[in-house]
Length: 89
Image (tube, rainbow, N blue to C red; front, side, top):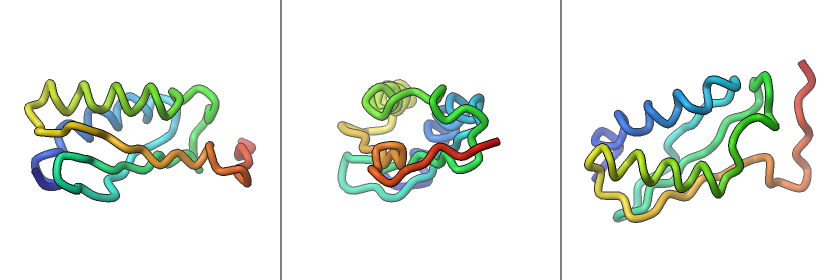
């Protein structure tokens, strides 16, 4: 499993968060674990984006449905950083 094989599933996941102006980037693939980063800096509705725990489960379901051999998905969610401030729009 590498970045090329997971991109169709990542694009599907990106479509879910892009509806609220967020995005998702791949930060790494380690064995059967996919690491992603949620990008919310330009999100129109930061609080509308699903919580990390739900996004991780949704992402894993998408990867498995797309035949990607992922056993785990880890998402770095900047909203969980104690210094995070919701951007004003």
